[in-house]
Figure 1 (cartoon, helix red, strand yellow):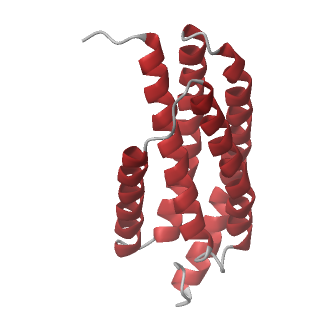
Figure 2 (tube, helix red, strand yellow):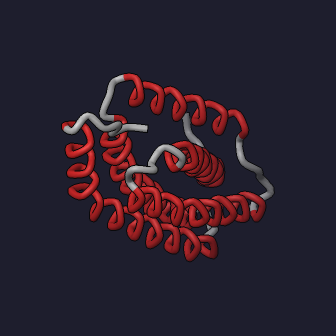
Amino acid sequence: MASDINSIYVTALRNIRALEKQGLEQMERQVSGLENYPEYAAVLKAHIPTTKGQLDRLDAALKAIGESGSSLKETVAGIVGTVGAAVHAATGDETLKNLYAGYAYQYDQIAAYRSLIVIAEAAGQGAQASGFRTSIEEEKKAAEAIDRLIEPVTKTYLTRETSGQKADS
């Protein structure tokens, strides 16, 4: 089944918006349980307004072509995110699993935005590409910040877990 570039662009925008919305909800849930990992909480707190700005850029791109976000996709993505968080919590080492997932998530978003730029340009929406490039740089900074946390958070987790202190939220 052939699709036109514009419908592919709309779908890509909606998908990335749903992905960002899911990420925002997960960060907001995680932050409250990271009292033993202040540096990790700080990275998430700093990235929350960045993600809101990314959502604003995606909304503007959708509005520019007469579209809006897909509430169904956001609902499904939110449910998936909630289920994922519940699985991590139920299986132990939740803090580490969320850290790993967050690291991978940043690179998933970088790839999605890179692809979106190609699609936007093919759809004649190259003016939006600048904002998407900004999102890529923001995601790279978040990935680098999380990268720097892997060892220290793991060490704190090990210290807390092996001394009988609560290691997870």
